[in-house]
Amino acid sequence: MPPLLDLRHLPPPEPMQRILDTLETLAAGERLDALTPQRPEPLLPTLARWGYAWRIEGLAEGGARIAICRQEDEAALLSGYAPE
Image (cartoon, rainbow, N blue to C red; front, side):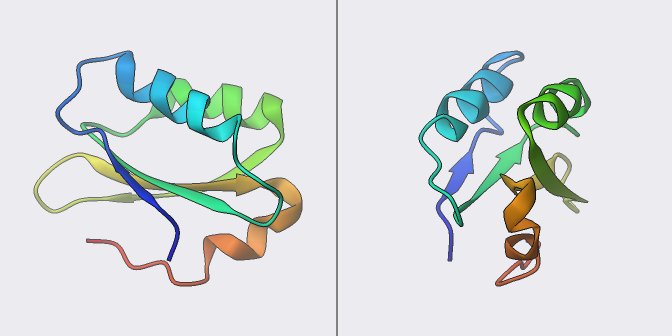
């Protein structure tokens, strides 16, 4: 199971910045999962520009869970993915 960043307690734009910082250390074949206080729409254009694929699920208690990996590793978005 990939590491999970719980960023729901942080004010914008800190969740986005923490995700981008973590992606800089993401190795090929790895996936990052993060919980955010809201759907991370402002992050998506940057992910596309940087060559990442993602999957977003809304959380019942509010916020969202986003799984991110390199586009060539897009199959990693389906393995072990279990929304909370």
